[in-house]
Image (cartoon, rainbow, N blue to C red):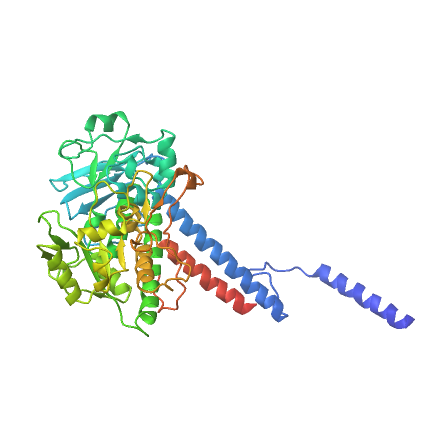
Length: 493
């Protein structure tokens, strides 16, 4: 043992001396030895993590570059693309968006308005359409002459930047209500005849853009919006990109739309594989008391005219009633509804003095009582879009109901099948007047942080298995990359 130990020490000393004499060459390969499978796995996990970090850093840099929401460009470069992240209009049919290097051309097809949005700090473009209105973007102090504007701006995180609103009593955002109560948001004065925002007040408040439902001949700061006019339910939601373009917030707008579209498609699939499997699909009619014909009743979703309601009916696996466009009397309407075997009635009658009309008040619109309505299949399934109200009676349906397609589809699914989209789901807008006599009221106390928030869709996240689709936006692509790399890491582990 003594001799073996002595020999071992000599051998080790000899090897150390030889190593000192060797001049090692520069090493150009990655310092890792593939001696064991464990080291091999660790090496590739390390490389994948570095790759993921680089991709996300690049994506974040691009998102930051396109936002530029706190100032103007210091030095103009005509060859530089100031909008690397762009919005593509996929479904909406009432607006279009075109990009150049330093400006965007936004067209509202409903009003015929054209807006040229040029990056602040760059020269205003020349040779534009004769009816184009120029805006330097990003705008920073918006006003809302339309309550839908509030919801869309909250979706892109710009709710706290709103300076004034035209109808504070109709606001159904708890954060906006809180800011109004703190006198942080002013009341936008409008002309009593044409309802145009007053030009002088717009300048006094430092407002650089007012989103309103129509153009203004007197106020150049007014921007016409028409999400309500889009004939596709997801097209209405896609107007978030219209608003996002004015704030250079394409990344957030794209992300919001992609999430809602993906959830809507999943809910649609869930309804198709569930509703009507064991029972007949219901037949739906949308009606209201006529504005133009005394004692008349209007069909608000007539056949042959494309409407967002068609998407809701189809998406919830129900049928649209085959009815005439309107009726001269309530009895004519009832006869037609009975003949069409309507099982769900959605009443859209305007009640100017009632916050949430009772079952009896709604029945009276159609000349019915609790006794006579029992002769109709829809007797206990009459709904209105007034389940969420502001403290002063404003309907959230005109705000969130337009912006969040997946949430409204969730309401429709619950109306048709009480176990969908989830067993414990609470409808947001559709109120059964027979069984739900009161509406829910929004109060300022529900806001966590009125100065920093991004409004998300209130729809439940659908988890039904659907055919996969390629990601649309940069945000979804980042999620896809993370998932892909994560799967590889798990596989290697």
